[in-house]
Length: 91
Image (cartoon, rainbow, N blue to C red; front, side, top):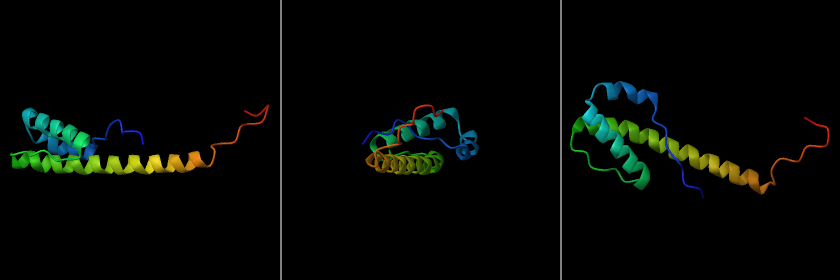
């Protein structure tokens, strides 16, 4: 199966990001990238960063699950042979 190229960072997390410093936000984003690549949550010592990361992690998990569903759907559709060719003269 093809590796997922990325993940969604959902708008719902914006309010929490506004409440932390840029430095904390950077650590959370880096932790999210590490988590996405390894599926292992890095240790974040700051409790606020841990809270924000948990919300971002939930979004990453949703993206991973959705991507897997789409891949499975596409695999099943591919087994059916795809869409029939259009006849001559059809648009």
